[in-house]
Length: 168
View 1: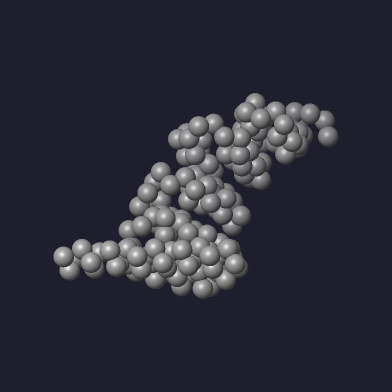
View 2: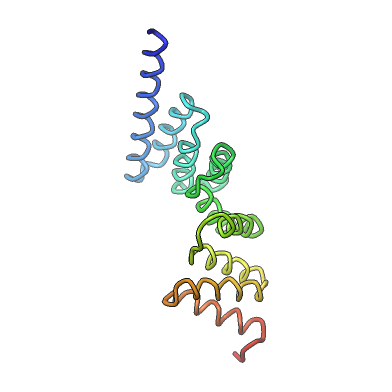
C-alpha cells in the first residue's frame, strides 16, 4: 500500500514538473523550463519524452549542443520517437553537422511514409554539401509528392544550374 502511494505520488510530481516545463517553454522562460524538465527526469530518467521536451527547451534557449544530447538520449530510449528524430535532423543541419543531418533524414525517408519535407530537407543538405545530383534526386521526389512545393522547385533549379545541367 505504501509503495503504491509512493509510485502514484512520484508520477504526479513528474507530471507536474513536465506540464510546468511545457508552459514555461511556451512562455519563453526556457531556463525555468530546463529546470522543470530536469526535475521530472530525476523522477523518471528513462522517459524519452522528457528528454525530447528538454531538448526543445535547450533548442529554444539556443543551447544546441545540449539539445542534440537530449534528442540523442530520447532516441536511444525510444528510437521510433519521430519528433525527436526530426528535430535532431534539423538541428544537425543548423549546426553544420551535415553528415549527421543526412543520416537522420535518410532514416526518416526509409522508415516513415513518404514526406515532402524529409526529401526537401535532405536535398537541401545535399545541395549545401555540393552533392548536386543527390540533391536533384531528392528534390524531384519532393516535387512528385507535392507539385506545389515551390521551395523544392526553386532549389532543384539551383541544383541543376550548379551541376551544369542547365544554363545559368
